[in-house]
Image (tube, rainbow, N blue to C red; front, side, top):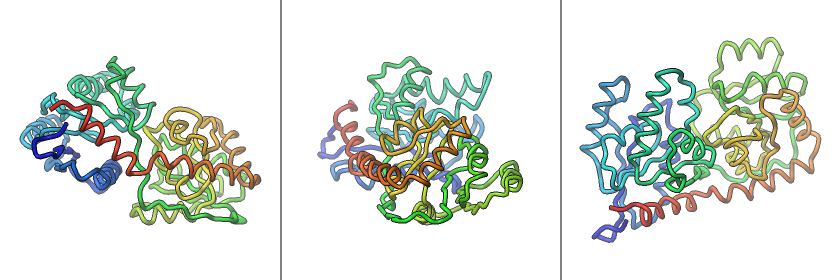
Length: 336
C-alpha cells in the first residue's frame, strides 16, 4: 500500500544472526537488493535469541517495539506474529518439514504457535513452493487464496560456466549431510561407479563409516563461504540431490544455473523447482539413483538436453522477477 510520501514502508524481521544459519537471510538480502526504489525498507534483526519461553516472550516485546507500517516476518520466527498488529502483517514460510520432525505434544504446540496462529493473524502469507502451500492449507485449513507462492531467487554469484567434456572420473556433487539429504543411499548407489564424490557438509560418524566400508573416494568440504560453494558447482560434472524432503531445494537451481545436469527426487518441492531440467528418481530406491547417475555419465545427448532445459528453467528464479513479486504484495495485497 502506498504511503503519503509516495514510498511503501516495510519492516523485515529476521532471527538473531548466527553463523551456522544464514540461508534465509541470504535469500532476502537478494530480494531487498532488487526491490524497486519506491519501497522503503527497515531490516530488523532480533537482538536476543529465541531459546526457551522467556526468550520468545522477550522477542515478542522486541518485535512490537520495532513494528512498522507493513511488517514482514521471514524465517523460523513466525511466532513473532503474536506480538505484531494484524493489519499490514506479511509472513513468509520456507520449510515446514523440519517442524514435522517433532512429535506428540511438542509437535502440536509448535504447529499451533509457529503455524496456525500466525497464519490466522497474517494479512498475507507467502511460501517458496506449492508444496509448502499445500502443507499450510493441510495444517491450518486456511483459504488457499490467502497464500501466494514466491520462490527463492537464484543467487547472483551463480553464472553459467559450461564444462564441455566430462572428467574421465566424473565428479558427483552431493550437497548437505542432514537426514533429509539422503546421503547414505547416495553412497550406496555410487559404490560401484568409478567417480569422485564432492560432499558439502559436516559428516556424521555413520556416514564416515559407510565411506570406509564402501571404499569411496570422497572430498569433504565443510564451513565454506559461498564463493567456495560456487566453485564446487563449477568443478562438478553432475549434481546428485535425491532429497527425502525440501521446502525448496536451492542446489537444484544453483546447479542448473551453473550449467550442470541434475538428479533429484520425483516428488514434492524438488520436482516443482526442477521443472523439465532434471532427471527425476525415486529417492528411496538406491538402484534408481545408481541408474540415473550411470545414464548421465554415458548419455552425452541427455546431459546436454538437461543442461539446456535447466538454463531455461532458472530464468523464472531471477532476482528481479522474485523481488517484483514481493513488491506487488506490498502495493496491492496489504491494506494499511
